[in-house]
Length: 331
Image (cartoon, rainbow, N blue to C red; front, side, top):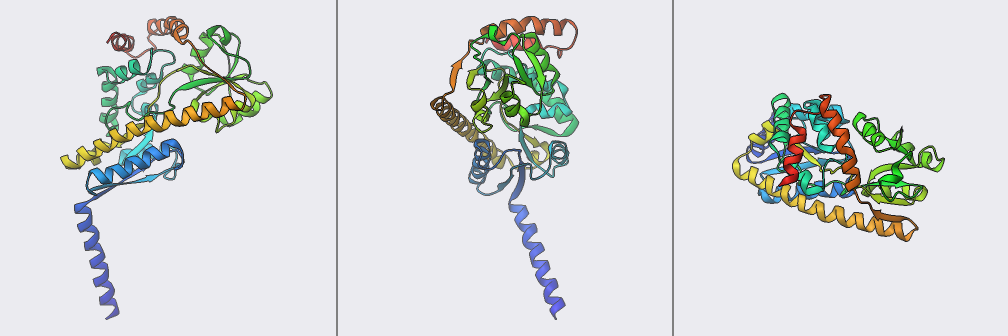
């Protein structure tokens, strides 16, 4: 009798689960960021709004701090549909479309709006289409909707007030060919170092400066050893909500609409929280003795034109890249 009872109970549980899945769907979303970070709060806001705007037909479970694996494992799970959304920079999609690294070309764009128009160009759409064809992965909504950063700065132990101060500046860089070549072209002495070694390396004058999103300067305590902070807008960043296309297409139209509404409102929230946190961080660091300036980036952009022209002449730029950038600039 006990065995029969257990079988009946198991059958009821199975029935309840299957009937529940017919009425509602649950997605897994993962990121590298802690849940209490500004970005982590944006992701949870998105999850909460999704449940609200889909009337509970779609729920999203957020897994912060790389709980579901590192980059390669997550991208594989995303492609397989085990993970439904990976919230990170679009550069991570270079696995399927190497051209996407150029969405963060240093000093190529006049301002955020110029970059956003470029990101909405037919050229970039074709790169995303290449990813979708190869991996079944695509951005959810407008690719620039959720802000990251919200802007980039150079943090140094010697004043940097313009392009002339970059000359022979010992600048820490991550091992990225484009970034290294760009800053060498601008005059810096580039030294590659791990992110976690930056503080000590500036303290020992192994390097004099580092590029960073403004949101990370205070948390990494860089301002303690490099009190000169200059806004550069080196390149613009957004957080891509990279999604499994099959999972998205399986949703009914009302649920898709609710999901996109949640995404757009989370984007608005990201702008509010990122800018608020950035300003508070700047105020705190200045109060503690740091100097903050907004650099004139026009000379940087002008200097980089010859760099990109040379790359175009040698065939190192994607076809149509310069034309797409210029078309976005003139709108």
